[in-house]
Image (cartoon, rainbow over all chains, first blue to last red; front, side, top):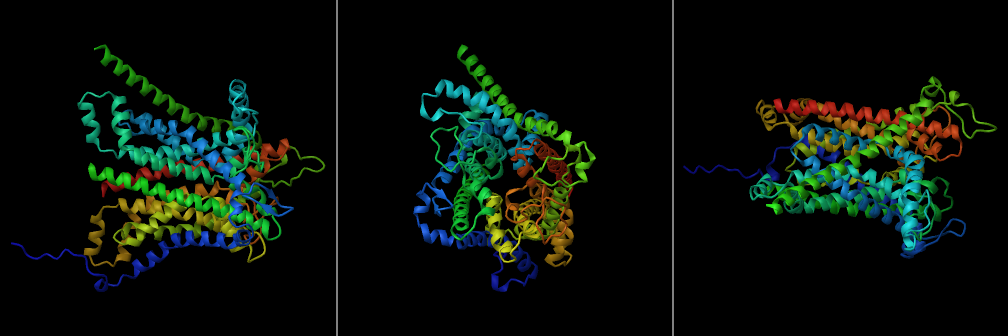
Length: 315
Length: 290
């Protein structure tokens, strides 16, 4: 009874005209178009600086608006360092919360914790900034930085504490990226096939053995993706960091010292920049920032997607 | 036997550690909220806070707290977020419908990726972009350019949440519409979109909350003002800018203003978030019934 049911899609040429599809497709294309336009615009605006400094811009350590000598290295260092330190601080907590949220038990506690984490994500960065400036940074100076400098100060990196600096900026960043880390890790952990967990439990594994040896390893790629996504957020965060990092255009000798990030330099100097070279150099910082975050984000998204697709396929 | 018991205790100990770390994660939320309320309340309880606009710097001396206000910032946030919503929400909804209804189209995958990437794009870069596009050609800062920068930020959020809400609607509804001979656009706009309305509204609200709290894209576009400004062609103040600018000044009374503005902002943003979560829960219940 094999009646030839033709299930092939209608070839594009023979597809009925669908004006609505064209319309919403065109409107939807605004997003990728905007993205490309943003990068191109920044590239164009940064051209004078790119021409003038070439690749030396990325390795230069001076930032002087008077002599018009601009180098990005201290800002790049500050950006990368604060982002990675924040990630190191947030990662254990983020994964723990994700594991708790992905557990099927205690729905009330989970609901409360989930709401809390979402509210944490909703708080505007400027509110984190003012809180970090007046509450977190002074507290961290007294209770974290000074004791560490006392006991570990002989290692050069842990000396000379300061209220505003790299470490306190990383601390507030860690709080800010926690929701990103948690939300995506939770989804990835939830996507781990139930069978895997049930098999482990049936073999007599305890809760911890199941989590540590079965669930987390199979969610590894996705958690890694979540981590990189959080890294992207940390790299681009502007306002809160600007308020507590201390805004010194140097590569500091210790982790507590004031420094600068790409985004903070732009936020502080752009409206006051005059001439051609100074604004162009600031835009070039923005260009470096956006290219790095774009790369990081695309990588992370591909990782998260492929890992949750894999989980669906094996489920 | 003892080995097994050790395994069980080990497991329980780790479970306890996980819960402990969860509590640690929630401490900052409690601290941010309580300090903002504590420090902001003394400014906010004076009714003048919502009626006056204040003129820094304080020369020869700052006016007493009871006379200071941030009405210019509240109005500015309202106007700019309003204009941004008018631009971003319709475009975002149509883009979201495209991604959800035409999943077969290869291009929709790229649009989706672009949305996700754009959500993570540093907002300061969007500020630089709008500066080059809307401030330089017109030779002056304007609230309108600030609103466009906020719209760029909102667009991917609206599009992605709309997509999620539309994708929740079961195919049966689509097929019944098409079976009745409705064209695709009427199915999408008159059947699917109303059914997905709560989810779409959630997305719009979340985007509004995000835009209301953004400072970085406004620095070089709306620029800020110290008096009440209602003309979208001129510079304008916004609540997050007030917090940012006043918090860094060495005057005690202006710092208090900043805390007050932070309190207003946090109530606004968290309020919108809680409302949108409630709307979303209704959407999920509704989609379950379809």
